[in-house]
Image 1: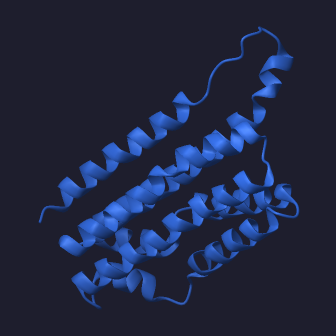
Image 2: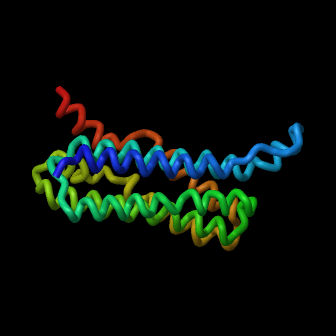
Length: 196
């Protein structure tokens, strides 16, 4: 099966997800700084979610670049990832509307941890399909996966802390995004080797 079709479909869905998120942003009715300040929680939740969607888009492209083939299992795992990402606009809007209340903060954390597990599932199936000697298998085989190991733990901690002190949850969600802003060096090395 052509991986380019899967990539194009995924790009389209991700573009729609971002469009839905930005459509939730409404300008203030009054032309004042105070009216704009009221929208800060909505805007900041949008920025964080946009960064997360961008991180997944970037890493998804790395996956597809090194993948040799795509099969039915990978297609469904990819749909699972896209489904999980499609929940982010809803939780982003709820988080922003609530001003960061406990339950929306916890639910937002769930909407961040679900794509992490879906991404891991997609990665596992791609390695199983392409084999243990594939570029992806070599990239993730190293013990240098501190990002992948720490992210779910930080999300889970953020979800739990949301019920006690939501700002600490937000800080953890921002921390994970900052960790992933720099692309996975393991994948970058494999891609550089393929190019040269």
